[in-house]
Image: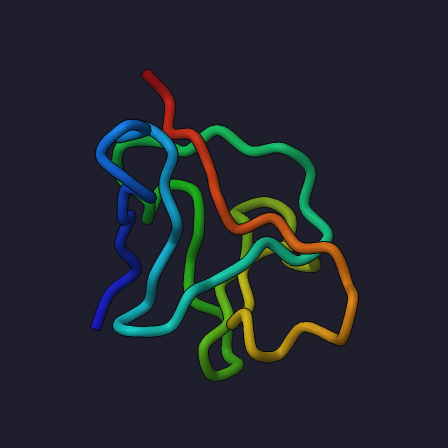
Amino acid sequence: MRLTRLAIDAQHPNRVALMYGPVVMVLNDTPTLVLDADITKTFRMSGSSLEFELRGQPSKGLVPFYRMGYQKPVRHVLRPAD
């Protein structure tokens, strides 16, 4: 499996959700982010299962949506760089 981008709908093809296989990934305490065309330039897999680090900021990154706490705000839709 690999980290992929998926357009949220046909009307907004540049707004994407990040997926790792069937799992929706969300940003963990990360400010607004512009993605490179190649996601591997932005994120790398950490040692933990299903977690990705933001390159240069290992304490921030992606975690599975189901791991987020109840009523914790998350950012899961991103806009890639044009």
